[in-house]
Length: 206
Image 1 (cartoon, rainbow, N blue to C red):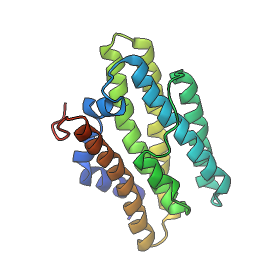
Image 2: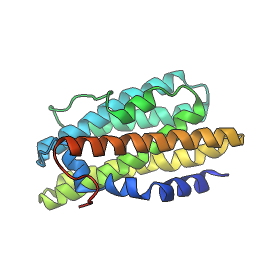
Image 3: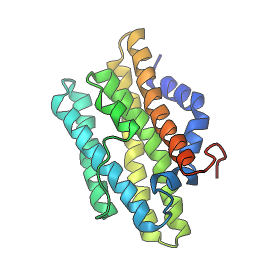
Image 4: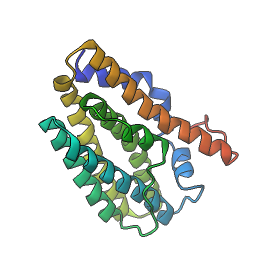
């Protein structure tokens, strides 16, 4: 197994979940049905603040130098994203299922795989935010979120490459797969449960 094969298999196996997490319904769920600019910014701010705190904590307690550098950079980028989003309405949401999964990881393999899974979900989410602001005739905000997506995709690429170094056994690769899948599944379950609670059918993508 290698990082590229691992990532391709994960994306293929979870194509349906990731597709729905890249739909407007996911944005509808994240904004509690308020599809307006301030609500979209608040949702993005929530994620940026939460990931900044999480990855900073990982960086401080991580023994692997390369992994610590990745977590430190991801934390710093998330802080920059929070500032660029410029929302005073968001609140960090460590209780969102995705972050509950991530916060429980305390070894290098699980953390790198967790960041990979989080980056996959976040890239899908931010892509939808780019589309929202394009449709809202706000090209400046759309460009801000394109920049955020580029950073998130860079974190993903670095995590893919780093798995080659930190996964030394088949058990390591199996654990990495379990964690990455669990992160995506947590986001997807949140998507389904939130939309169902709002009376919206979650499985039709739009």
